[in-house]
Amino acid sequence: MEILQKIIKRKSDDLAELDLFAGVCSSAMNNARKAVENIELREEISKTLNEPSQFSSEIELARAKERAAEVAMFAESQRTSGFSYLFSLCSVRLWALIEALVDELVIECLHKPSECPDQKLLAKLKGPLIEFRTAQPDEQAEFLTETLKQAVDAPLKLGVGRFEALLTPVGIGGYVQEKVQKTLYELSQIRNVIVHKGGKADRRIVEACPWLKLERGSSVHVNEQMFKSYISCAFWYLLEIRGRLDDRAGKPRSESLITALKAIESKFEVSQKETDEGVGG
Picture 1 (spheres, rainbow, N blue to C red):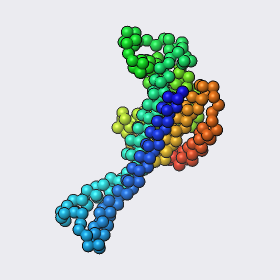
Picture 2 (tube, rainbow, N blue to C red):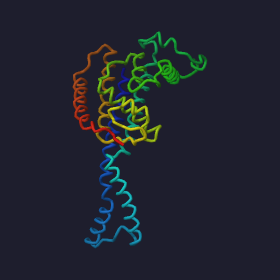
Picture 3 (cartoon, rainbow, N blue to C red):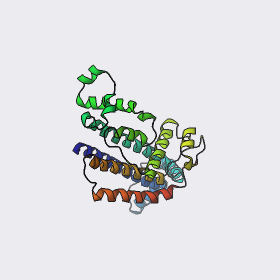
Picture 4 (cartoon, rainbow, N blue to C red):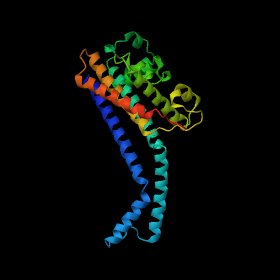
């Protein structure tokens, strides 16, 4: 139980770090739009204070301004798209963190497979016996996890369904709020398009997420409000799993946990209203 809680704490820190990173980068991108003006301002201040320029020659200054102009142009183009490049990359990272959370929890649970509720399913797992017997405990748990994924067809399931298929046999499956489920499903589809389709909408995402109003071949743009919805739902799911650990141990969920889940749901409601414009192409 304690190790499982530590896993959740580490992943919570990872999510918070990703959220901070996204905020810092978007702020930096906004500032980069004024890259040329910033250079000119620094030069003007140096002249006013009778200090030497940071550039050794007019040629070096001109080159710096030329580079700054390129940076400013890129930053402005990103601003008009809602910083899509940044939030697309962060969305891919976000899905990877959720996958890692579930994998680590299941691996830890399978260190003691006899304590998992679905003994019938675990008894059916197949693999090389000698290799398994001679492996270290950590390797055995990882082997069982990968075998379990195949047994429950986790890779073929959509959204949080792939995670619940793994969490349920080890006793940490449970309820997922409908809007959270839908949003994380959208995130999974967005992630697949970014990673496998170069950010271009394919038939699958057009049919799977009609509310995004995408057309086949159009560019998928993840904006800040969309990312806020995704990461809010990721935090909700992480906290829900934390609550399931208490359920598994026969303990009541703490009031702080219940309050946190409700607060995230409320925040998510506001964020989703701002996201209803979709991703467009």
